[in-house]
Image 1 (spheres, rainbow, N blue to C red):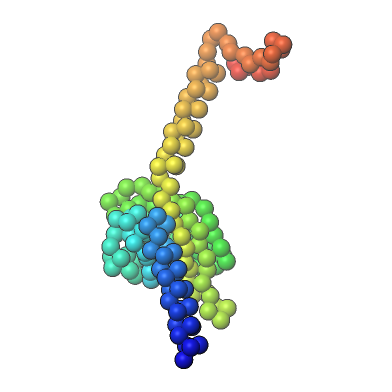
Image 2: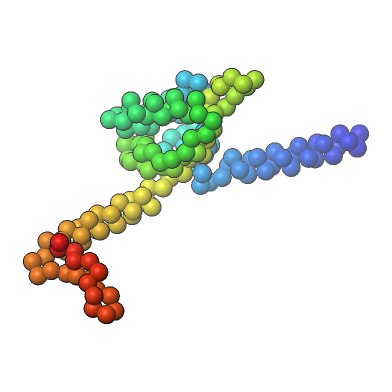
Length: 168
């Protein structure tokens, strides 16, 4: 009886840790079957895309991809199901068509060596990505401005030796 009680207590501790991870309010967690349909999404995932859990259940992951990228996205989903692990960034859309830049990490699920789906973490990185894209645009504008100056700009070291002449 004591062994059963200690095992039961250990099981409750493991369940509490699992629940804490899965119910994380920041990281979206999802599982898809071999056809790319959702079999599970946590609350964070649903919030990122502005869906209720029952609305996403059995929809294909590809339904979140922009229409112009459907073919590429379907290839990516096939890779999720064939590669042991896949990670990177992808552009998705929420329920209202708003662009959501995401970072994902996905693992293939296998039973007895046979793949049956994939599960993964997904994080909304939209604000960071948009700031990065703005910074790239500013750098490009500044570079073009300096490149097209008629007077010329040079970088020199402490001894006034020219390091780089931007206009040439």
